[in-house]
Length: 395
Image 1 (cartoon, one colour):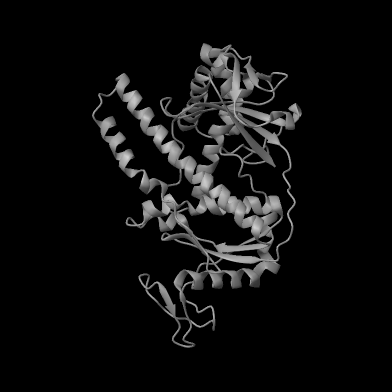
Image 2 (cartoon, rainbow, N blue to C red):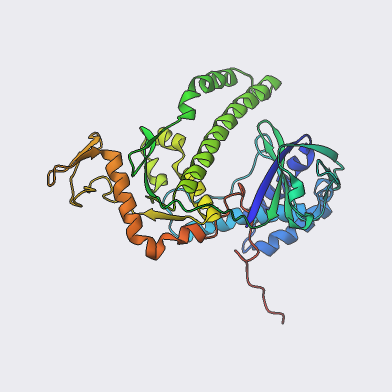
């Protein structure tokens, strides 16, 4: 498993900015040239290093990492086309240096100090040594466990990410409890015991200040320094909202996993649900998919079974007698006409979800808990086995 350890530091602007150029150049080379594969992009990076001084300053592994990111976007686009994915297929796009910036090193081009509080970059840009800010203790890992080092640009500065090859397995005492979760908008979720968690609505609560910053940005002149400052203030506000949302999902998912031996939830297609223009912003603000991903990740770490059940008829079926009791979306109370069972709509759905999870746990329940979940990586690390083109035999 690859874990990500992120620490903030000052610097890295030049290398992170120029690393976008090989990435964009590889995408342009793929667009303009037919039958371009992964190894062709890697060879093209060597051509860029000979032609342009800025490309020669980059570490050779950093150039190869840019080619890998470009090929990862291209391969993802082809996979979506082959699967006949509805909607946009994700055609590779060029990255702007105003909003993006990252450079990735593998095993050379960087060096940690003896106290692990400073990092030195030794590529052609000669950025020098920088002090690391953060609470991560890098002494816990050996240097040979660090497989990649990334310098990533965020709205509030630059961060260095250490991709570490390690296994994370934590022990917990069995509780003997099982739970079913029904996510929603009024409450973030309602469990099968009738407990509810309030929806924090971080984006809705910040809309007033975001609109104010947007108005200030629209009044500035394009290309001016004031516009750059206004854009940075707006980006930092959005970053704060996303971090609060992620922190809520991580802590809640960990609490759910540690308190139960089995967690069942609906296998919702959020991509289709956000097509509803009236509910798309609220659904995106709730971040159900992020919460599910963290539940599955912590399920693997703590050895807890996580089960995704089909969402069909979980709200319509009666959890007491099992018969269908049709109701509209506005009807928030479940009243069964067959057995006269009365219960909150979401609570009834959570009980049905748990029943489906217990029914299928012997067949598919443990697969999510023990599958390969690489959630600690915000950016996908290309695998050596994926999207490889077969070499032509030598003649």
